[in-house]
Image (cartoon, rainbow, N blue to C red):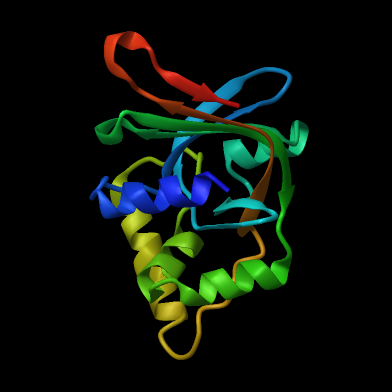
Length: 170
């Protein structure tokens, strides 16, 4: 109920990448965090997309829990969400993938997220290879790429106030 208007207010206020969120994950050996983009949300949760072979995917597979943080500093606001995580359906991933610009679709095929490569030119070469491979027709959804839904269990809304008398609603 509160996330939707706050998200809309962040976009209307011109917050750069209002959909950028920090994603915290963990497995038995490591804790990871990185910035990812919220692609959509509804009453079922918040959805992001990634390579299923990435470090974050491996951590989500080991421990299907995550924390998200939206730092809307220009508004003196932040939203922290913690909850369970599940893969979305292949159909939902296909729908979203088809809506992406073709270059972004090709980038999903070319990039092996979290993998070390010897040079950037190797990545660019892989991108050009995918461009040639899918020059005619649609770019299909890679079987190693798709979405995750964070199902909120706790949502914390923080609003900065004068004299450090901030509001924090959980």
